[in-house]
Image (cartoon, rainbow, N blue to C red; front, side, top):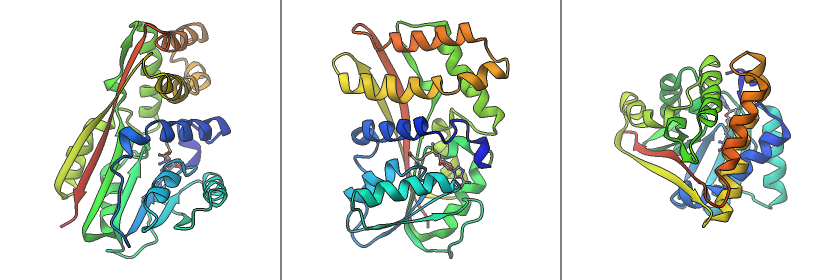
Length: 269
Ligand SMILES: C[S@@+](CC[C@H](N)C(=O)[O-])C[C@H]1O[C@@H](n2cnc3c(N)ncnc32)[C@H](O)[C@@H]1O
């Protein structure tokens, strides 16, 4: 994937969204991102370091090498980690399809919200498996837009989500990849595969998720593709804005919002 084809772009707003997403989902997705003392972890596609800062702080006894294609994102990630005084992370510009590491180098490889952007997820996974030690653990985390439902329901809101799914597909990615983690891990020859759904259910009883997930993570992501979607004629500005309004409507006191992420653990034999 070239930097320019990353569907959400590399803007400051997207960096903010990635941080909101990681902080909000910490308990639901990252609560069991725990590594053995003394282990070496490769984080592939670290972006602006939203997950890096959470897991490096949670696992002070592990060392992290965090890679990304984008030098701009890496530089933001370096600043964040430095400002937090975290010392166990090294950043490197590298491509998952051309990894600059020896075979059998890492105890764990973790990849979060990256495979949805790749046109060749299986070769990517096989590359990552090569640098994982025998007996090491692969961890994959992805969302699945097909898992989205909400109240009040709205055809306009579903239509703007569909715009995102189509754009992602046009870029060679797959917004519904969460359901494919098990088959991918199986095809790549991993054993002891365990995939669990991580459902985010939000209603007004969870005000931090109303803000952090419905508004700042999910709707912000869809809102961010408005220009591309209307520019390509997938929708018109009026219909797009109606869909976004209806997504925000689910954040009102009587609304609910549901989305499922998937997290897979697997062992290299
Ligand atoms: C949605 S961001 C996820 C960032 C981070 N993992 C998180 O959870 O916030 C996806 C990142 O994957 C990176 N990426 C995409 N393809 C890549 C590749 N082939 N090699 C390395 N990084 C890649 C992009 O540059 C982008 O920063």
